[in-house]
Length: 219
Image (cartoon, rainbow, N blue to C red; front, side, top):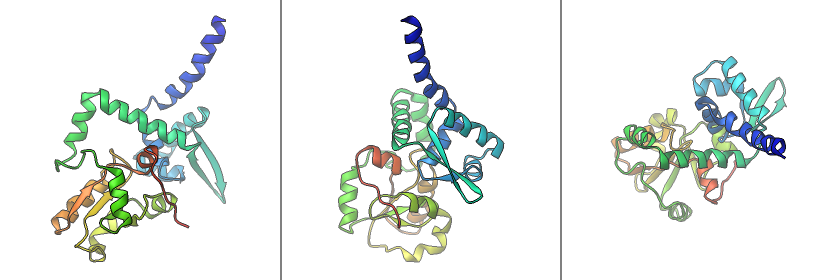
């Protein structure tokens, strides 16, 4: 029976081994945004394609990532939303336990209200009523894969040129890929400089879904 128990723990440890690497965690977070090629993942994670391929292979061995062919391209995706939930819960537990992570998060934020808890249900109600503008500042393809209800797509690298499209009489709630993503922080800083009322929602689609709230997809 000892050998059976050892085998059971070894199988569970495969998941722990797969996520015990910071770049693999980043790749999981990126795949929470939707399907991507290895080239896209390598560029967004700032690593070589060869290294990205090696990390993705480890995640595939652990059955956390799947692939599909689209013409000449191979697209990577999470095996299920439970993998995204695992990332959200693991990150939240780390933030709860590790002072170092709390300090690191605080150090990248200039605005005192940016990382404070926000009532998600209230944001959803206000967005439904048109009382706030939810702004998704991720790339267009990530918005198309999944986004918050009533969100408007305006990538951060287009924001400066398209500011005139945003109404100034409605507060803006900007979000991107989650607490470790800085695109929404940059967007909020720009919006405030231009006279907009803006706050940074640190949730991404994975966090939003993990809290049982609805997610939309573009047709």
